Length: 146
Image (cartoon, rainbow, N blue to C red; front, side):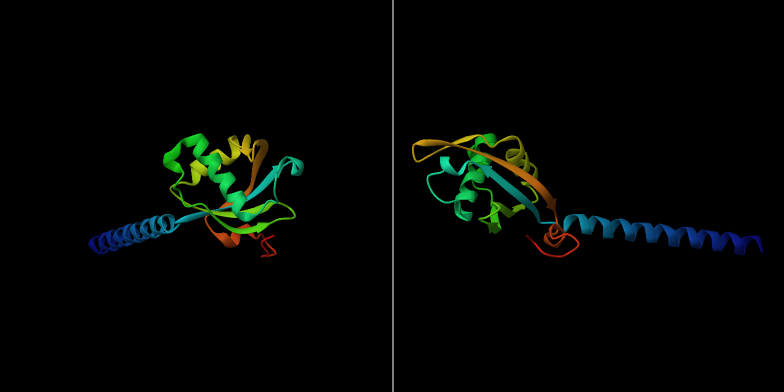
């Protein structure tokens, strides 16, 4: 009888070990699945300083400039996509690769100083209100991306 109890215990131990290994593989797979990070970025600037209307393209140029100013020209080729831009509230949803997320967020949070445009200086500051590896989580409980 002692041998059968010991065999059962050993089998349970082996089963739990296999389950733990499967769980770890699943967790690692979930961590590796995030290819992009999404950020909700607010732009603040004085409208009278800007020589033209703020558009998604101009916001993208300004953000790329902030990143390349902080980290050099090697980061100017990072894919920084604006998925949505609200030209009334000056809020945009930005997608960046997960490998460059820390650099882009640091540049937007710390950077954002005067930018030379059309012969004048325009001071632009950025505020990252939300960031996630899942675009749907930026929407919040009401599932609307504002």
